[in-house]
Image (cartoon, rainbow, N blue to C red):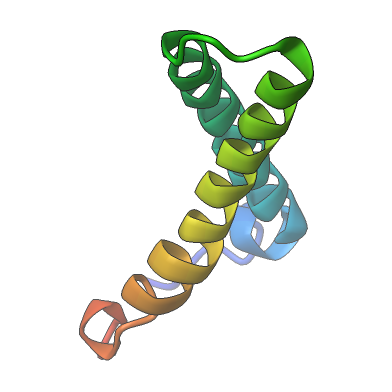
Length: 83
């Protein structure tokens, strides 16, 4: 019994960059939500400083995800397929 040559394989037809775009949008959305909650909890900030703190926290989440978690932890050899 052979394989069907007309089967649809999403990996071959779906562009790979879309997964990175989806991941980036999710990371930015989560970091903005958490950053807004954190900056709202800090008392005594005027609006200008609050904007800098907000964007600093968003940038920190973004860097932690892409450099720390995704770059170091998710690239370990133990997590790669061995076949």
